[in-house]
Image (cartoon, rainbow, N blue to C red; front, top):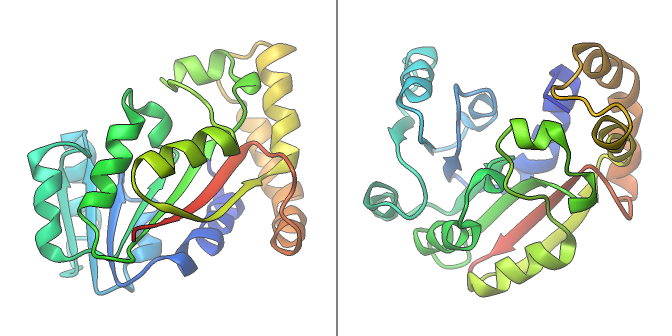
Length: 222
């Protein structure tokens, strides 16, 4: 489901503790998650859309630790980020949009210092793939096995790998296979954010579920 206030805060609590002080954000968009990172020493925000990058720059124009650029993993501009000696890379709901996701993950690892971390959030379970995924230009959804395989081929070690948002699993399946929705429902998002996220986030912090709408991973470079 699309991000709303409580769900966005849940993502922040999940992701931020695994990041260092010199962070690359792959697929920054207009900077909604970037705000969580601005207490770091350096934030390198990257997106393929020049309009998004310009909006992000204007939004956080008073932040000297933020550097935004147009690019993507696998390009020369992205490779140049190694000069900043980044210690972590965060990629939230972006990897599924990239045709060659393995090459992208290798490129992320290549610019990090030794022991650097890659933090990922991706949609889970190909069985949930439906019209909304197609309209969002999702190339695929992931399982623990497929993401672990990508991590290994990229030369990284899996430090954390678990599903999140068990309730969203059922909602996405219904939208994909029963209602055949072409777009996300704003009403569903509001109900989920207000009524489900507050207790679900606390519960899953104690015991990650065996399935979920999304898959969370922390990969470590040797």
